[in-house]
Image (cartoon, rainbow, N blue to C red; front, side, top):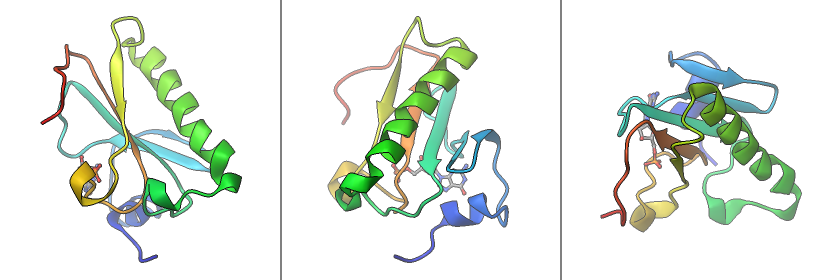
Length: 114
Ligand code: DGP
């Protein structure tokens, strides 16, 4: 499991616009936003892909969703709606191999993804 750019964001080697942080999680604005709100929420624990999650990560993974909805409420997009995306591997469009949930909102999103 090699280090990714997100480890460098956690350690503050690389700057990011941090939206939320606690002992186990970090959330920050995506560098290439696809909507007015595009935030990445990740566990600090390095898990490369969703394929690598273990039973004992259950609480940690669930926590991503609680943080996402709390941020959505804080940003005022909970009522209008938003999308949560977790890409996996090449066909899923994953480019950084440290799992992260995309929270995307602030505009009407189309469906289905290309
Ligand atoms: P994914 O394709 O699901 O692995 O998403 C990776 C996202 O990470 C992509 O939307 C762009 C974002 N990203 C990549 N490098 C950086 C960075 O250095 N800073 C920030 N804030 N976001 C980054």
